[in-house]
Image (cartoon, rainbow, N blue to C red; front, side, top):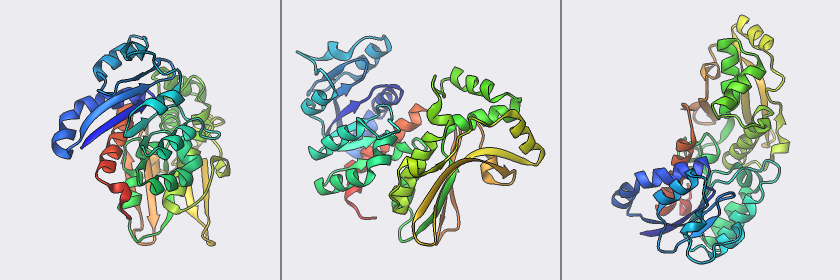
Length: 349
C-alpha cells in the first residue's frame, strides 16, 4: 500500500524517527507492503516543507543539523505556519512529536483534532493531547474509521499500551504501578551511588542531556502524573486530568533522606500509581516512597523504567524498559504506524 506521511515536529524524536524510517525502508516494503513516502516536515524553528512527490529525508536531516531552514527544499512559497502546513500537506498519516504542554495539551490537541477531522491517521508521542483529550480524540478517530495511536507517550517505545489493549482481553486492571520518569530515577540513583546532593545529581542529569534547563516537569512530578493519567484513562476507564493526581516530586529529597533510607535497607523511588477503588472509580498518585530492597522497584536504577499491572486474572505482570532514548520513542511510533496499516485500530480487542 502507498502511504504518504508527514512529520509534525523534527526535534530529537522526529529526527530519530526519520533515521529509523530510512533504516527500515526496505523492511517496511518487503515485510509489510508499505510503500512509504514522506511528503512534509513541519518544525518550530527550521520552517516547513511540503513535496507531494516525496522529500529527501537525508537531505532534510543534514539541513537541520547544520542549523539551516527546511524551506530551501520547498518549491514555491513555503507554508507560513503549522496550521497552513497541515491544511496543505497531502499526508495519509501524521507523526506528531512537538513539545508537551502539561497544562492543557495545546496546540497539539487542536492540530491532532483537525487532522483526524480531515480523515488523517495520527501517531503521536506527545503526552499532552492524550492526557487531556483521549476520549474526544479516540471517539473522533473511531467515527472517521482512522487510527489514533500513541504508544510512545508512556515508557517510550515499550509496548505498554499495546499489552493492556491487546494482551489483556476479558480482564480487569485493578492497579498500575511503576517508575515512569527516567530523569528523576537517574537523579535518585546518582544520589544513592555517588552520595551527590540533589543539586549535584540534577546538574549531572542536565549535563548528559536527560534533564532540561528548566527541569520542573520532571522533578515536580508533572511528567509522571501525565503518564499515570494516560494509563488510568486508557486502560482502566478513568476520566482523570493531571491536576487530579495526588502529586509530589523529588525536589525536596535530600542526600540525608537517601542515606537514611539506605541505612534502613530501602531506596527512595518516585512511584506512580493508579488504583481502582471499591466504588469503581480510579485514584492516581505520584510520590517519592521508600521501598524495601526486595521490591522490584528498588532494583530499577538509572534511566530504566518499569510498569506493573495487577489484574483480576493475572496477579502481576511487569514490563521493564532499559535505558530508553529518542530512538526507542521513535520505534514506538514506527510500530504504531505499522499497526494502523494492519488495521489494528478497527479491531475490537
